[in-house]
Image (cartoon, rainbow, N blue to C red; front, side, top):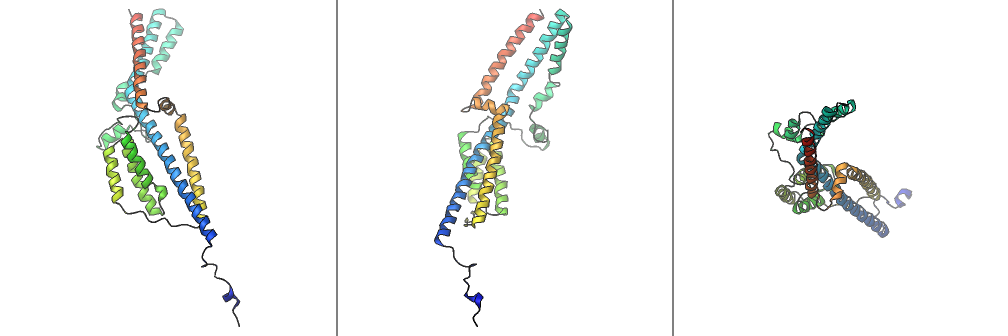
Length: 277
């Protein structure tokens, strides 16, 4: 007696048709293209995030004392006016102006007002951990640092990993790359490039099943949406808007603002001198 099951084709091991293979290859190409596009977008967002962070720190470091001086001059001018007129409204304005002056400016200037996510100035943290205190030298890292960073991000990005272990290895490495890039340290970036080149080769990407590839595309789309929201938040911030005013050379914007503040300080000092004659 013939076994009916033996006459059925073995679909579990049946090779895919040429059409199925072609469709899977097209889907694999779409995934790879989406991955590369996402990495390029992440590079752009991370670069802008670092510029915003560096601009914020340098803005406070270089211009913070000028803002404090302007607040102090405003308070002194208001107090001089109140002393002359004795008007209750002028006295109230003087009290309000004095209340806006930052207390203990010497502590603010000592640590430059920089705060990390834990509320501790990074300079203070560095001192406590015996690490060197090194403010960013500029808003935007040099062209060479940017080139090294982009190359490393494209080669070592965790999104290119095929397994959890490889993703963790890449993630830990990219954290070091981001830190070196934020500091504009070309030497460290070159060392990291050499380290990555000498490391284990990435495993061959095998073509996955259609369901896996579709799931991957969906994850990439979600990641892109999250990054878009992050980019929009950065651009909408006060510092982000300032950088957009000088997209080619944001460092020069700090110098321009400093000149404007110095002019305001000189004007207020002259007015105060007139009032206290």
